[in-house]
Length: 153
Image (cartoon, rainbow, N blue to C red):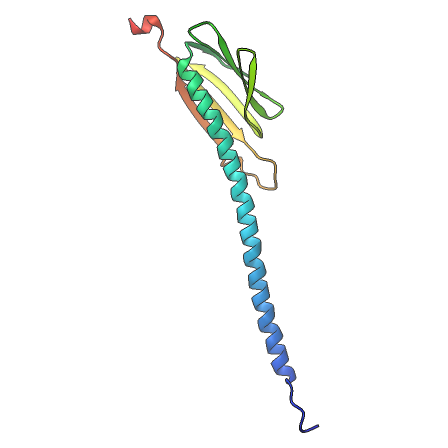
């Protein structure tokens, strides 16, 4: 038995310990990459939903001559047509001329207010997932209505 070569027990234990450390660090790094990517993806989704709603809200609000708020927003255009914003089943819908468009999904809260010819919308997007990103997905937008003929005179 004196001529046999191999590893001693302490050498094997040290090798297993080092390998275990390396694997645990790699596992933690992969978990972080997957977790951060998922969180960032949901956050980007929420921000995209809000930006799309803000674009249409700004566009329509600046064209409107009158507005009424509450649970839904009704904008009256100079040609007496109207555009309505309302949340139905967690989706923000824009209805104009009998056509309906979904502006944003995953809307958990929205409020419309009109004061002194300024329309304010406060909207929260909360994509479904394991993250609570509503703190990132809440935005408030303000738009001034088109000046009336009386205000221009």
